[in-house]
Image (cartoon, rainbow, N blue to C red):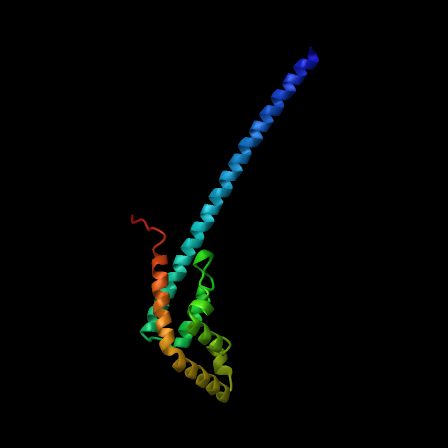
Amino acid sequence: MSIVLLSIAGAIVIVALASYAGFLLVKVKKQKRLIQIQQQKAIEKRNVNIFENVYTLCMAGMQQQCDLSEIVIRVYCIMDYVQGEDRIDFSVNFPAIYELYNIVKDMARGEERQKLAKQVRMKQTLERQKAEARLSNEILKELADLKERITPLNNQIPIKMM
């Protein structure tokens, strides 16, 4: 009789522990799902911020408020931080931007440029200006296309007014 009681008590303990383990497993799955949702929202929010900056840069480039090479470098580098499905392959979708970026990406800028010898600086300037002149029409079209492409992506996250 005592063996039967011990068996029943053991079975009750095992069922209780299994139930508690199942409860904890469900709770962990819910928590993982919430973490995924939060990460996705953070990525979307970050991407929207990036797209707003790129939109501004595209407008500045289209209005020729800055050198095209500077716009291309900034747009390309900023868009490199986009995560998820919204990433854009410039070599396929925007070949003129990609080509100018590859031409000017290794050229000295800012203080580095001032430290270069005058002849080297002039050579880089000439190379950059030739590339800009050759690609300017295509780049302006691609900046307009890029601006249109990222505009709907800016509106993905609803903003609540308080």
